[in-house]
Length: 132
Image (cartoon, rainbow, N blue to C red; front, top):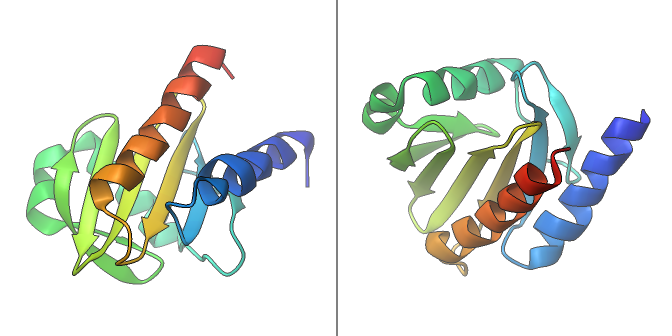
């Protein structure tokens, strides 16, 4: 694991999982080419990563078709050039693109998507401000 991945793993462990909002989290490379870091057992396929990249390029498609992470399909409740929010029953996923990475957080039914999104957006703002 390179130094960069170690930094991203720290964000996954402390900022995302440590927020108490997420049961699974990952950080993708900014160009959607792969996974930089993730919580144990959270697997995202190359096809899912590629589709997430496409969703950011076409928010209308994302809103109509949703998106899949870790084999779970989510109905999109928000899609723009920065963020994707999805729901699957009471579970949810939040994906936020920053200047240097793409962060993903998955929450279970005991967490509100709005709270999870606020936590992830705050970390994104920090990363964008830090200019990593």
